[in-house]
Length: 259
Image 1 (cartoon, one colour):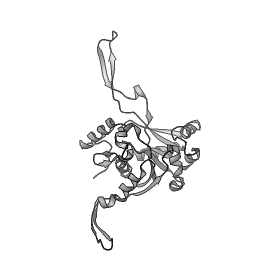
Image 2 (image 1 turned 180 degrees about the horizontal axis):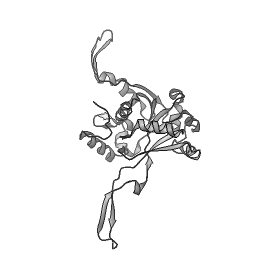
Image 3 (image 1 turned 90 degrees about the horizontal axis):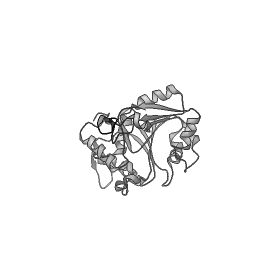
Image 4 (image 1 turned 30 degrees about the horizontal axis):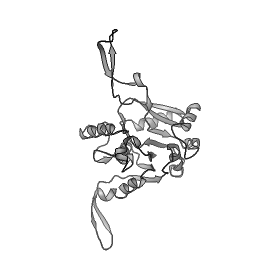
């Protein structure tokens, strides 16, 4: 099953990093967050990726073109250019990188990948978020629901504690972290899609999260897999720091693969 990954936006909310590289290439630890996302899917057996690039797509292309060399011991004959790889830690992944346009919206990016995605069920996610979501479970749920698209409904990480106050408002009577009772569930991505969803996208100016998803809702063809575990997007430098610290701790919740 192919995995499409949105990776073409400007990432303006973290412009300190994206002025030089696209957001999916911002490092968490010593690897781009895009690598972490692909590792998550690969842990569930999905290793055929379609990167929907745009802004600074050449950065992604260059990283992948050099990936095997950077992660291998090799012998090179400079006269002939012949390379003999002696040991490699490169993952056995198949990756298609598409330039889907600089100003193309998310729906348009997806539609431009139609020929690559083919006529089979595919997976879709954003290139800036990690989770311990049960991807295999989402696929099984999607098939049982019999819908055109399933999204992962998750709880955004709480940044502020919720207080309970006494009647006079002067004493704290309870304190807890914000949860779904306070903010509700959000679209966490990690979609499972049937190919007919591409017919709901009008063109480059279509935002996937607007017209196509609303059409799915009105047709009763959008299901939600509830994920109440770890989920974190990387929208700001603060988010990057959170992810970096979790990775450095050796207990990153999204690291579901074995080294």
